[in-house]
Image (cartoon, rainbow over all chains, first blue to last red; front, side):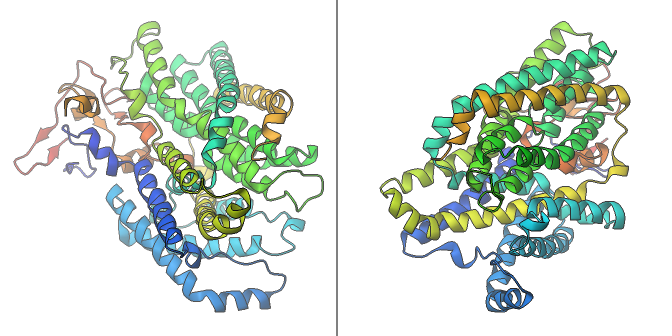
Length: 464
Length: 82
């Protein structure tokens, strides 16, 4: 990077691909996630555990119990806060955020997350639907839209960074064999829905007279991985400056609606958690939004009568469907769309030659960390019987990683709310919104049919 | 390390990546694209090095090119002048 004398940093013309390793947050998520997994395993191998620092609020039924928990564990929470602060501040500083802004913002984020996490551990929380992901999201949106926070605090509200760290940690808790077993079905189901959704949005948009590049940007947002896909395709096809913000607004609105609607319908229908997770993975538009929905529904298992399965089934099915089935293909989508845009569509003022290496450059690299974490822990614990795994490995090795993952997800869900300021979003316009909505309708119905009927036994038996 | 040459992503000299009309700094894009940070990020891999062209009002790849290309001047101190 070289400094731009007019104010903003601009990339150096000689920037090499190797700089991606510290210039992109995907790689930082890998370094942090795999670093935590490596330390956890090293401690486990030496008869110790990461458990002490991976502290979480305990179940409570009155304030006295909660106060006792915090007074007994205050040093552990302080140590955990320091750990997060050190690793996140280091990463975001290299990415270009000022530590003087990140640190106070993260302190606020941690404090509110602690309150939300504690609320979720109340033994009456389910009765009042106080699921931490939904509470974090709603509280964040209330604060950002009604009260308002200084804009500079956004330095600490890094939705994508926290979700990527959480997904790499999630890899360590997901058996690699499960990924191999369920991955192909996830890819098949996701491909059917993604291609159908894209074509519906594209054709409805074209029928309403929208520009091809805007239709492609909207279509990718609905079909692949939400906002990230929309900007990737906008860049690949050379969209107009206003196209990406239109797609971003549309995706955000529908993604937030779906966070609440998909678990609500799943609950009304009494869907098993594995099926609901697969459906959410097929029909949500963003990783962070989908995980909020899948985790909040998964938490109902064992708490609400009629909901079969486990919390892990919802989260695993969602992750396999969304990350393995949809996210990893964005580079290929971008490459194919670049070919179509340059060879079949009207030329724009600036053109490009489709570049096959874009498949790699646009690949969501955090998935590499997710797969490595899964493969490593599966290999490292392969010699344990199932009984020993549950008795020894889970509480000492996998459990603490899962607890840190839960923290990362709460940081993410709260950050979604804190950064979603509705009045600042670009106006989407009626036609783009309707075109996207047509895709949503098809996506949700098709995703439900495939998850709850065609591949139902596959998703219902996940992890069994 | 010839077999790693595919990792070199230096854009051609006359492409948008080196043009003074092109802006792809993550912080700039996060301000220019409202809502980007709610479910994505300027630092995400999927964005590659795409950016905004102030000349044509397009969001495009750093490898794009056009006849209005204007190279960024670089001072002796290494500062790019836009």
